[in-house]
Image (cartoon, rainbow, N blue to C red; front, side, top):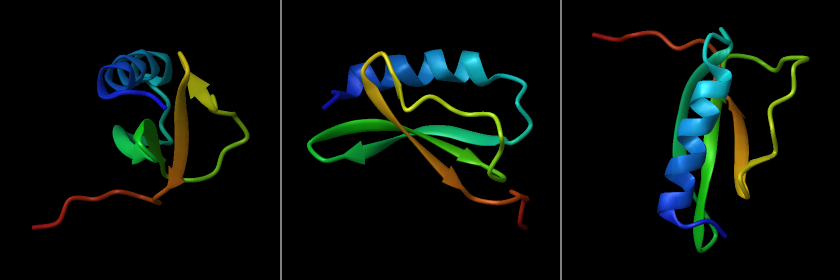
Length: 71
């Protein structure tokens, strides 16, 4: 299990790696058992694969659909 500092570092690395990919809606940190994982929210399933882990930190991909602002 990754601790919070490992998850934060993995999140920043993954954010840089995924920059400019239009299907990526957000990248965050989520609980994973006794530790943490990186969660990537995407608008749709894609043919391009995302890593299952970054620097030993699990990556969870969650399809959230289109994201829009609400008043």
